[in-house]
Amino acid sequence: MRRQLLFTVSAVLAALALAPLAIASAQDTTRYTHADTLRGSNGPARAWWDVAFYDLRVRVNPADSSIRGSNGITYRVLQPAQEMQIDLQVPLEVDSIVQDRRRLASRRDGNAFFVTLAARQRAGDLKTVTVWYHGKPRAARRPPWDGGFIWGTDSLGNRWVATANEGLGASVWWPNKDHLADEPDSQRIAITVPDPMVDVSNGRLRGTTHNADSTTTFEWFVTEPINNYDVSVNAGSYAHYADTLAGEAGPLTMDFWPLAYHLDAARRQFRQATPMLRCFERWFGPYPWYADGYKLVEAPHLGMEHQSAVAYGNRFQNGYLGRDLSRTGLGLQWDFIIVHESAHEWWGNNISAQDHADMWVHESFANYAEGIYTECQLGRTAGAAYAIGTRVGIRNDRPIVPAFGLNAQGSGDMYPKGGNLLHTIRQVVDDDAKWRGILRGLNATFRHRTVTGRQVQEYISREAGIDLGRVFAQYLTTTMVPAFEFKVEGTTLSYRWANVVAGFDMPLRVNVPGLGTLVLRPTEAWQTMPVGSPRAAELTVDDNFYVTARNVGAPAPAGPGGGG
Ligand SMILES: [Zn+2]
Image (tube, rainbow, N blue to C red):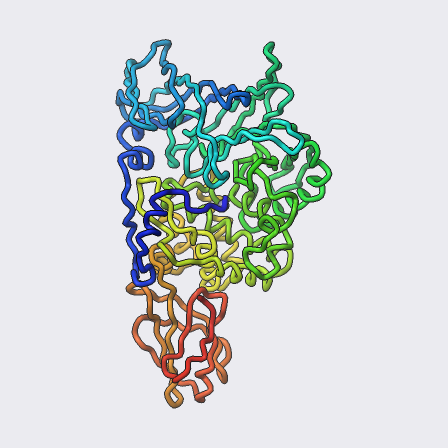
């Protein structure tokens, strides 16, 4: 999802009015709490067990905005231990925690429960602990960014209920190990709602049970690993239609769930899902969830990358709520939510970051995918123009990567600046077939896995055959935009990198009058080359590189090149 800053700490930082550009390599100076550590770190009551299966059953009561249910957590014991951390956020309450038919003692520490297990936990054991709970979960304030449970109605007055909880965490409505590094291998999601509501959750519908109390239980099943924040409720007056894509890995089921009165609009707009899937399969490899299928589900919020059940609320129009984030006009040629959120099926859902500090692995690639989709539809030049256009959204306020282990979120620059980092690296690789191979290779190598950002960086460097470590460090951990400085004295061109991390050595494509297009290899030290004519001072930097350029020899710099 396109996120905005959620945390009050961000507001505090903004209020401090730090002169952000003066801090070359801004440190994450946020004050984190004990709760942040419990939530964001793989602590001692988490690290010893590995989630295998979540058996989630929740009864949703829109009449009083309450829920009641249970989650059976099946896990592998990695190391013997007796204390288990299970997360469930206030104001929800635990009724009981049970293992082997015994009620277990627990103590609550804010949004975390520490459960004392009675049975021996031997390495290699597969055990289940079931948490029964109820309450009125946090209502979303500004979903999907400031999320929780959405208790709404559609425009006909029918009840329409949904969840959106990325960042905030799945534990806002169900008990689980709320840490990104540990995904279950599969999950049941059995949601009970009042008749005649229909619930659409992730994976495939295994069955519906009509209950005596005028409710229906919809049992969905996800057969593949899923991010806990992607698990979702969407309950309303839905219509359904289906299609099949002849995809790279065979027939892929596509299921569409608009509100019933939006069926015609959906049949028009959701056609874009087919070219989107074709484009992304070509560039990123097979859709990662053939077993669970592809779905678009209309939601009472803008949208969210809920795995195999992408939430859609873009009002059946192109652009981002009708706007073009690139300001080139190209973003109005397609539906931002269909493209961006579906891109997360590869970047975020297939390859998932283990720590929120590495959310650029989700958002930078999803932003980059918008340009790739533009390229698929309108050609390479248009795709590049889109990527370059999104630079208007770059703030360079804080680094993209904040502190680890605290569920901390970096700058919103992870979208347009991260996308432009990838667009720039594509220029450095300078071989589209190889670049596409890298993008597909990432999805094959890390298929259905959680990763660190470093693993992604190292994979790209290795496959490109170029050490991109300092390039990633520059764009992800500092707010500095590399400055290509040059001057022409007589018939000699001098050039270097400034405003860069130590050792920054990114190659750069320039056009020098009289010499044509060439690739320079600037470092922080001045280098020279003969250029034959003073006209070389009119050189231009390839705008596909997200850098600035300045002629430091001229009295009035011409200001060529991109960046800014
Ligand atoms: Zn996103």
